[in-house]
Image (cartoon, rainbow, N blue to C red; front, side, top):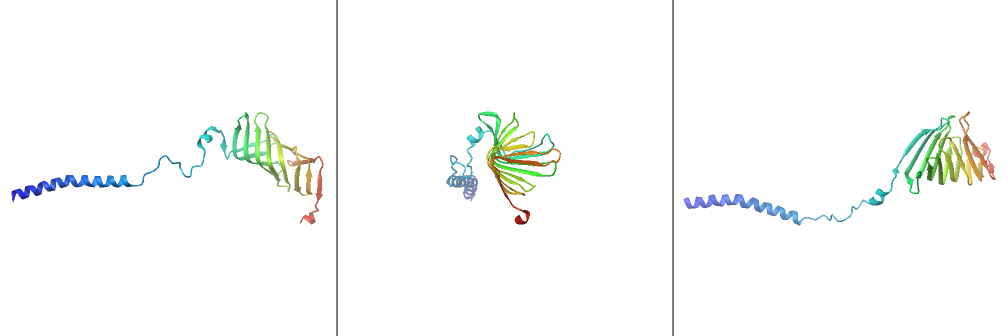
Length: 204
């Protein structure tokens, strides 16, 4: 009896040691057999060239606002803005949108595919499907628009097409200024103006 009890006691004591060790071994085997992760692979949803992004300086979705010398409120939005590699004073923008609130209540919205601005000269050049919308009813299209920052002045050195209260027109050049007294926009079309006059009754 004493021998049997000693054997049983020793068996239980060893079992308390061996069984936990076997359990840990089984668990470690499960981890080793589980699916491994390929750390050398690229992130599937990361399509940005991070190295090129780090080299390029720029701002995404910038917004600027200010007041011109005549008191007109001017705001500017773009998808991206970056400095010109060849001229640090020149800024390059994509998908430009600007709004000018004139003193007389007229609002002018400008859209363009691209824009360049010279910070020292306070000038800007908009190119690529430039569109000017005025709340007075004018819709003007051109391929290039040169503008001043400090004053509300814009000039299209090339052909323009427009629709407005008088009708449809084409011109070789356009100059846009503001009337400081009335607070409205002045549009001057020159260089071969062609106007198709549409009476109000016909347009309605």
